[in-house]
Image (cartoon, rainbow, N blue to C red; front, side, top):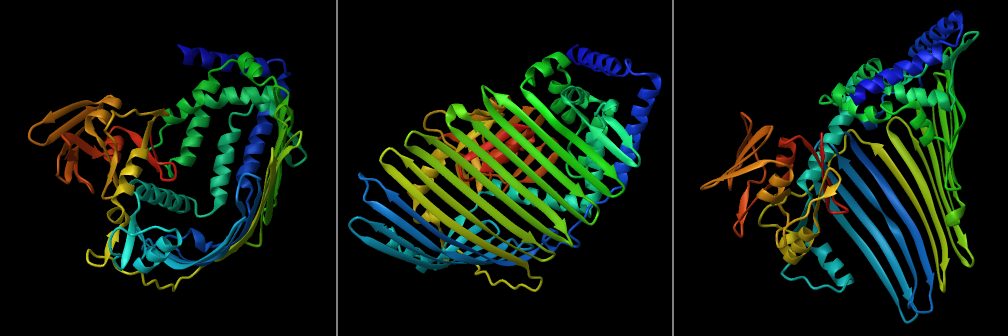
Length: 556
């Protein structure tokens, strides 16, 4: 019912837009839109020819350096300053998922009573699902930080990378490769995407100036554009663009994305956007040249958000400049982000800047960050600066840091990563078993935006790089019917049917038999199952944020 009303409203306002025009004007508008789309399909963009960084199994060698200084003035603190200098020389083989990172770092810590100098020279190895260092390096680190090792150090000490994170990483790499497989260059992708995005634009927004095709929109046109986004032609074109990259994507998925906006009335959308000022929203195409200019602002309770974008391409070179700024007088705060991206002669130049300013009475915060990079066919380099000055009450902080990096494709790169075995290595969890328990307690599961609460004393844990969760808790939270059949069988159903067995590496999803890296286990009378297998069996995407210790399950 709601969708039907939304469709009728879209038809009504489209008719209302066209009827006041003379017949020939409406025809001209439609013809001008067709001419614009035809012109759009014929333009070309400059590209980075044969970019080596996008090839499958790229081998890289590079360096990252850091020079930073932090100083603090606080009458209640003994800390005075900290200087850190150093860098990392690295080699990475993405065909084998291996890498070597030679770290050289020096630090100097000053306080009112003493001075401490720290020097670190070590090598970190990466071998698919493991990061590891030598036992000698761990001893040096333990000495520096005043820690005692609980047992004698082996030759190597490793950290298991979370299996979910590795799977997610591999999926992202595969998506990237799918992109370049389906779109060897950006031109086809850009043309198809722009053509799809132009489809909902009302015909009255198009005009022709000689051989130049013009699109210009005001706020009313923008509202009609938003309401036209549930149009089948638009959905079909957008699906055609993204289907090769995301095979599981359906038109229903896209309809759900746009239905809330497209289902709103023009009046309600205008109400929501009453503080939006569309100063300029214009695109022109003339031959191989395409120009876009966008200037909009939005007011929220007296505070102003400004956004400006300007881009130009002539088939040989292109550039994009953007700026976003927030002026929040109520918070005495100003934020600005600026950036520029240009391509010419197969070289990509990028510049970005970030500024924050806050002041009230004697307190202030000033943050400036700048970044520059240049990428060519088989090499890239960049640098950044970070500067912070702050004062609150009797405390003041000054921080400066500069970074530099280089990377180059090395087709003949040879890596000699040590091989680990049970006699020459131990995991960090085995060396410090209490750390594992602390880590497990911090794991958080978020399902469709809501945190899943666990029973007291029941917590997820890691086994063979997989996150294990209590069977009944996760099953019932996802709405599954959960059945335990002695002595060791587990049945879960919710549309699909999942059959697992405790301490058994094989399982069934519907009629297909598959293998687990980590089988279900029974701990303290409770059955734990691998979260990713359960989530994906019942149509959830599973992502893991290792920094925050959060696992996200989102319904597909």
